[in-house]
Length: 574
Image (spheres, rainbow, N blue to C red):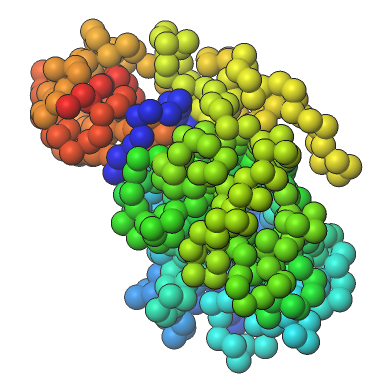
């Protein structure tokens, strides 16, 4: 993996504490174990393992206690004949998963040790399926109903859609969904969280999808509101909506990793067919979308196409983004489909006022830094339409969008003494103040983006802290200046030599006793780019690392041994 060194540098602040499961009973759940009309209580003293596609049928209620871990078996381990495992909440059933920041509810792979930040990684995707919730709200499909993506069309319990836009499928609070998206067949994977026809009576707040093979969260119609949503390191899109979703959300965070296959942070589709009502038109406030790097490439997915994008609107999708931050993508910012074969397309929605971006920050895009570079109209073949693109760019400028650095917290000269780093806007930066007032139903904030602003090492943690996989897998700590030595519990880590490095860097460290040592090189978004793990004897040790293939920029050296974590800065300069 690699990073873009030119943008404002920052790293997600992550804790090692993680919500773990200790000596729980392992309870295997198959589809036969959940039936309609019953109430089930899953508690944190047990470890629940999904074996195959498990449906919670109509009339049933599933209560999940804070701190509970639910695991999904992968294809080879499934005993039921299904290709993978997933939990599907059918129409008329309800799930009440009420975690907390201290005790999140975690859905993950069957053998993921949720107390160990190094057994799984950001590239471990498709290990199981995901969580699917199906409701009875309106969707834009002929007849008003459909079968959900990824499940056999003949399965009646996988139907969704209806006429009750206030439908209530339950509650998701502080739920983290990790390492899912198993492939059922070619180009047919399960999203981390799928919401089919879910109504506005459903509460979803503090939800995470981490390292999913397909999309992070996808809506198929419905009216549900989703707040405090984090999607990272997915193999396809971050936030995807289809079939006339008319809900909304506030405080969304999307993070992509360079090098790996990935999609767009936002892929927004309309009805099917194009003329089918209702059209998608959600309202999204305070999003922060971070791409793979303005100068980086992806090995597959939409980010690897000839025209990579941060956000795409197509078919007849509308929708609104307000007070948001879009940074560090390898292509253009936003494209709006202007089809040659339809008058009912997203470009028409822009002209009618059903699609708009208002008062957002855009910074560091591979396509350039002018409105004409960033805001486009494209046809159904993703070819740029020049005349329509000029109108799109003019509309974005008129709506108060800003092409400038929003200044996110970082390891730059302002913060030379070190401390926690994170994606909040800097407390004294331009995006920390003067955000316009929100419409009714949304919080009015002074700041742009998904997180309240803060100075570099203050105690105002982001809402990611404590419960997310991002928090569990990455790094928090005090960072040195990359010279001298840091120590903890008798473990010592020297600054890399040479520093800056061009080809080979030598890492020196000392151990008070024999120990398993993991050395990780991370870019300053917290993305591992190199890693070694070996057992060493007590005393002085060295490890040589090849940095010749890393782009120029700033990196972190992270040493983990016997519960101690030490960090040094390293500069790569070819």
